[in-house]
Image (cartoon, rainbow, N blue to C red; front, top):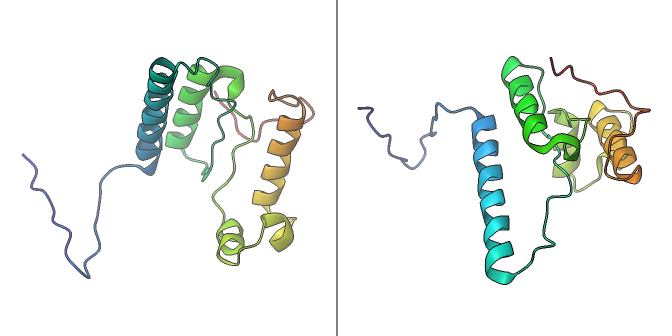
Length: 135
């Protein structure tokens, strides 16, 4: 049995799980909450309008997670993932939108594609090719 690590003041906490595992667990909890709200409060109209992948990195794990999301959410999954980006972090730290901070950055361009997808009716805007391969 693995020994549990205690959180000590001033010491970093290390964890052996992928951040994508935490994101999937969070999504699982969201779906459970939606089900509870639907049944307990009678809000049958409550649904996920779309799923946006953020902090995207070009790794096999990320591609596998994307494919899993596609299998489960189909057309609700936006085709354009938002890449992990220092520019996005800097814009956030400066309380600016990415379009104000660096409109030409990969993060800004990705968000612009997502906006186009939303304006096209929460489906995929075919004028934008997905920036990842799912096979």
